Amino acid sequence: MFFSRPVRDRFSSVLALCLYVTGSIAGPCDIYSSGGTPCVAAHSTTRALYDSYTGALYQVSRGSDGATTDISPLSAGGVANSGAQDSFCANTTCLITIIYDQSGHGNDLTQAPPGGAASGPDANGYDYLASAVGAPVTLNGEKAYGYRNNNVKGTATGDEPEGLYAVFDGTHYNTGCCFDYGNAETNSHDTGNGHMEAIYFGTGDGSGRGTGSGSGPWIMADLENGLFSGYDPINNAADPTITSRFVTAIVKGESNQWAIRGGDATSGSLSTYYSGIRPANGYNPMQKEGAIILGIGGDNSNNAQGTFYEGVMTSGYPSDDIENQVQANIVAAGYATTPLTSGPGLTVGENISMRATTACCTTRYLAHTDSTVNTQVVTSSSGTSLKQQASWTVRTGLGNTACFSFESVDSPGSFIRHSNYELKVNANDGSKIFSEDATFCPQAGLNGQGNSFRSWSYPTRYWRHYNAVGYIASNGGPHDFDSAVSFNDDVSFVVSGGFA
Image (cartoon, rainbow, N blue to C red):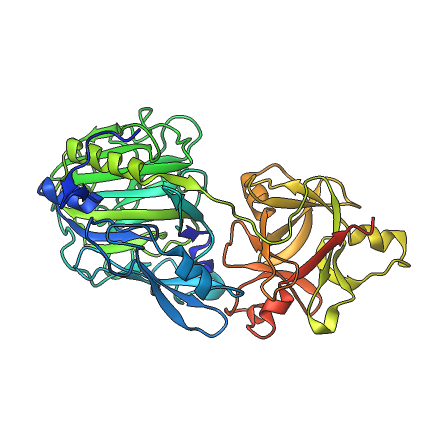
C-alpha cells in the first residue's frame, strides 16, 4: 500500500525460530498468541498473518465503474491473489477501499474521516485512498500489492500494554507528519500528550524533535505532540538511519516502559534501538485512546508519504523472543521488489516525443511553453523551436531508479515535474522533493495505446492533458482535471522518436 504526501491525495536461510501450527509455519499472529500477547488488529495488503486465515485481505475499487472486489490469499495462510486483482483492475485504475482486520475483532481500516489537521482545498474532507498498484512486491516469488478506524474493539487504552509491528518500504519516506501505523485518538483530533502510541517512519516532522543518528529515515514513536526516538535526549544516537529496502519496525509500551526495535525485513535479526522509561511531560502514564491509523497522524496530519505492507497491534507487551520469532517469519515470507513499469519500453538516453491518443487531439504532442507543460500540434514541418519543446530525453528516475525522469531537450537540466498538481518544466535543484516529483512510472496505456505515466510520489495520479494543459490527475476527484470523462484516453500517450 503506497501512500504519498499529502495522504489526502492518495489517500520483500530462514532462522529455525518459527512455531508450527497444524503442520505448517505459523503466521505472525499465531506467534504472538503463543506468547500470551494475541493480535487485536492485523492488516496486510500482501499476505495472511495467521496460518489458517482464508478471509479477505483488502477490497479494491476500480475507476471504470466503481465496482469493488475483495482480494483474498491464494491459500490458507498464503499471499494475496494478485492475479484476481490484475484481472479486475485491467485497463483502469484501482484504489484500496478497505484493509480487513484478520484478527476477528472487526478492526477494519477504511477511508479516514475529516480530522483536526485538515487543510487546503480538501479541508474537512475525507482522506483520499491509496493506490492498489503503487507498490507491487513479491513474496517467495508470488506477486502481491503492498485509513482509520475510530470505533475499535480490543485495542489498548489508557496505560494498558500493547505491541506494534509494521513492514515498510525503507526508501519511501519524507519529512512530513506523519506516516504512522498504530494507536491514536478516537475523534481524529489532537487531544494531548500521551494519547497516541504509533510507529512513525521518516525523517521527522520538522519540529526539531525526535531524531536518530545520521540523516534518517528513522523508526520512532508518535506519542502525540512529539516524535520520540528515546527518552532524554530524544535525539537518540542509538536509533540508526534505515538503509534497508524492506524494514521491520516495532514499537511497544507498558506502564512507564517502552521500546523501539527494528531490522531488515528480508534478512537477519532485530536490534533494539531504545528500551526504557517513558518521556516526561504527559507521557507517563499514557492515555491511549485505541483508534487505529495508517499513513496519517492522530489528528489526520496528512503531509507524509510511505509504503505499508503489513502490520499488527497486540494485547499485552510482547517479549523480545516472541518478536524475534515474528521477524524470522517476516524474513521467511521473502519480500522482494517487482517491476514498477510495464507497457512499451523506454531506453535511458533516447530522445522521445509523446502523442495524445484522445480522439480530439491525435495531432497534439506533450510539449512546454516556458515552464508550463501543455499539448501542441507538432508535425515534421514545424519549426525547430517547437520540435525541441516537444522532445524529451529519457533519464533514470531521479527519485526511484526503477522508474524514469524526462529532461527537456531545449532546456538541459530541467525536467517534467508536478507542482500543485500541474506538470511543469523546472530546473533540477537536487532536492529530495524535486527528485520524487520528477519521477514517473510508465505502464501500458489505460486505453490500450502507448503508455500511461503514473506519478511516483502521487501513485493514484497520472499525466493527463486537460484543456491542452498537463496535470497529474486521478480517475475522479475534487478538481476539474480529475473528471472521469475520457480519463483513460487523456492519460494514454504514444511514444515515438523525438522530433529533436
